[in-house]
Amino acid sequence: MTTDNHDQADAIDGAELLDDVAATIGRYVILPSTSALIAVVLWIAATHAMEAWNCAARLVIRAPERRCGKSRLLDMVEAMCHRPLMTVNASPSAVYRAIGANPGHPPTLLIDEADTIFGPKAGDNEALRGLLNAGHQRNRPTLRWDASTRQNEEIETFAMAALAGIGAMPDTIEDRAAVIRMRRRARGETVAPYRIRRDGPDLDLLRQRLNQWITPHIDTLTDATPDMPLEDRAADTWEPLIALADLAGGQWPRAARKAALSLTSDHDASDEGSIPTRLLADCRTAFQDADALQTAVLLERLCADPEAPWATLGANGLTAMKMGNLLRDFEIRSDTIRFTTGQAKGYVRSDFTDAWNRYCPDPKPASGEAVPAVPASTSQVSPEEASPTGTAQAVPSTQASLTLTCENEPGTAGTPWGPRPVPPLSDDGATDTNHTRATA
Image (cartoon, rainbow, N blue to C red; front, side, top):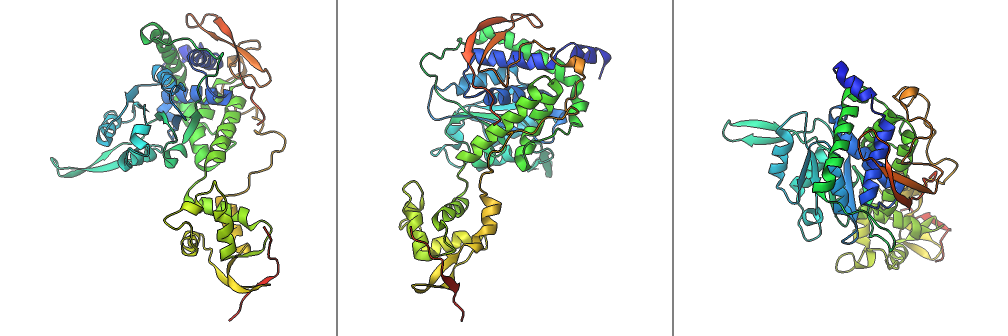
């Protein structure tokens, strides 16, 4: 990195810059929560440091109906992210070529109207889904046969991607994403109209400032190992966002971890998982306190839930054979059991315990802080680089409302465009007990 680049980066306060991005988004779009706003801001910033990441987080912007602001939010992302490539409906081959055209510096893929690609009437589109899944991790190229050279060709898939549409995206994509659930504005909630010719230049200045701040810190971000409040794939997805929050300093490190926990928890709570996993969870409810249940009783209880899919699964609903096939992959099998009413086929609770713990554990009880304290060593900027006390912050932890500002010129004090309530970040039948397995 050149000395000039470092000097430019040192002159930019990362926390204040992220505050400005948050304020600008909040001027044109009302997001469902502060956590959602934080996630979008950090995702935009992360697109400017692609060289540093092992995983490229997906951003899913979904809504239950039209006119919820998802396309407007995607406009904000397009205006401030690095090398945006917007498309409404593209062939997998075109996307492959766009990503692989500049190895090491891929575009940020933005897909609007994604429900026309992955919706219930759109077909499977497995090739594009596979590309988006593989491109979440570095060094997962696709192979294509080049007939002209008669050789295999490796095409890169690694790129940041944002999708906006009505309804849920494929679960394998949402599992790799920060999921933003938009909602229609309520009466009294107002936003400024966005006109790209008028407002676009101001957002482009923010894009340039993000790039000037982040680019000299690529090496620091590459080596960053932030303390993560999440595990497994969720940690892979959120690590770039939290690393950038740590680089910015101020209130962003703690706010980012709160957002990660909040949005991941919301996604897990609404995710019913696959049919086999849903069956496991519903069996736990059906067992209640019983140590064993007859197969017929278990089926009766499962199918009695009007909100469960079991009564309408297939032509005849869930049958003993279907249930046995679904549970067999979890190494759960029925057995002949001696109940007080006599011998019958059934299931023993203890056979489910291991699968319940692994695939659908009970939610952990809330206790104390919802997010671990951020250690002093986590911040990757020196104390004098952090936002000084009294500067505007977009993510307060105690205030119930916030007056956001939007700068007229980079580096100048902002002009309030009016207070808007922002949610504060919160720390955030009969049973048969007398039974034995029947012996031969």
